Image 1 (cartoon, rainbow over the protein chains, first blue to last red):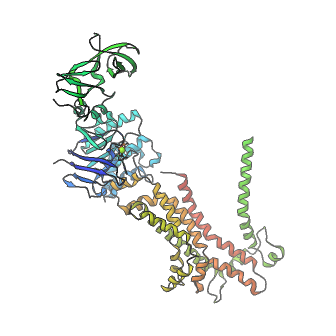
Image 2: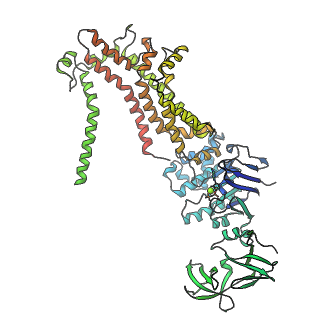
Image 3: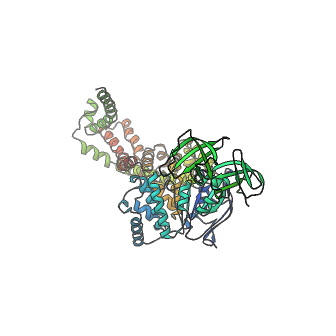
Length: 351
Length: 283
Ligand SMILES: Nc1ncnc2c1ncn2[C@@H]1O[C@H](COP(=O)(O)OP(=O)(O)OP(=O)(O)O)[C@@H](O)[C@H]1O
Ligand SMILES: [Mg+2]
């Protein structure tokens, strides 16, 4: 039995919006699972249902072997870090961290020890007497983390806790969260719409789209074997290239090229290729393209081009390509790195 | 240059405002320290006179009324109790009412709120006879309870607290819930401290409201022990027509000055809290 179990969970808001469609998921003890998806796909809704802040319309949520649908959030022993941190504005940092301990009737000395502990861990020892209004964004984030950690809950929930930090700090805090979670071994769910964050943090990812869990798996599974076109497109930057065509006689035919494909014959197929799986060839055997735009990122170069039939393609190379806008280039790809999707259902084709 | 001029002009206006407010009180005070002959022959006095202690002592300790049971000191105490009682209960009750309206999302919350709001249109003066009937039926005439109780429900305060609670971010409640706070603790540990400023402001308004009640105590109290300052105000003017030697103008002014003290005291005491809350806009 897993630590957290969602069984056929459905959420319909009182105004009739269906935010979550029949979703099931098992999370093991100590795991860090990331819910990732575009804005409005229902990540927060799902998280808030686990926290008990939203009613479950249908289905069941189990925590540690017990059904928790009807249990009050205050009784669930779950801590949550909110996007805007929701620190208690009228309390000092010390009291912010201590509040949850106090309301659980823990003794004063123990609370003191625990707060000192946590503040050392997060290096906020010298902020304890300040009010949240006197802290910087990064410091507030730490305090919010401290508040969650102090209680040593069964589960940590994070709802986009890094989105108010600047890019550099975000990377740093991301690492810290990961380390901290490893160290404490607390089961955690992290919500983000940033796929880099998701890939780097999660033991497993849950990719969501419009209230449906599109795919659940390790970051590498999801990256290399996306089950739907949506997942393929959403994970990875720059985004995967898609070219429509059809499969006949083990060959995928697009308007401007053909490529081997070991699948059944089928019309209306979409080929997906990641930009980094495309390379520029010296030979003129590859697909001929015209360069439209170049983005130089230092470690890699992203080239946007169109082939002769106006298919948009994006190529990402590690090497310093000496390509200019307006040049004509030839590109080819490794046949192992191809993804095929059914155009109607958007599902990956199976062999 | 222009800046300076506008600044001076602004100060001039402000000064004018201050004078307008302060001069009547100053005049009342200075006049309260003169003897009645001076006041009647020469009018109000601009400078303090010699009779401060005599006049105030007379007002504070002379027994008034028909059965001569009450002094100004007694009336001051009565009014203070009435104001304090009304303000305290009003604030507590409206906070709780607003809390239940905003945080317990029962279906009738909005209609109930509007129903409470409508009572603004029915002030005590309008419902004074029914109120009197009820209070006298349950035997609360001539008691502090009777003075205070019918006035403690306040739509205005409910409205202000409701608006304030609505502006408190939901995450705060959610976060507190996850931290193990029940509804009672959330009220005490969060809403009360967060609305400190609001409480101070409401308390001041409601105190002055309760303190300045006239009609209700007049109707309610047949026993002079329960007379209030505002009622006494009338009393001290009445003897004007009774022709007791000279009208006691100086003592009247002393009485007025004394009657101002309790509200001023409340404002001064709470003001520091009030302004502190305003400066540290924490949210
Ligand atoms: N209280 C509510 N009442 C009605 N509909 C809601 C409510 N809260 C959210 N929704 C709807 O439910 C859907 C999912 O919302 P949710 O907040 O879970 O998205 P999200 O994935 O967290 O998005 P974001 O990344 O922008 O935070 C959205 O379509 C939203 O409009
Ligand atoms: Mg969200």
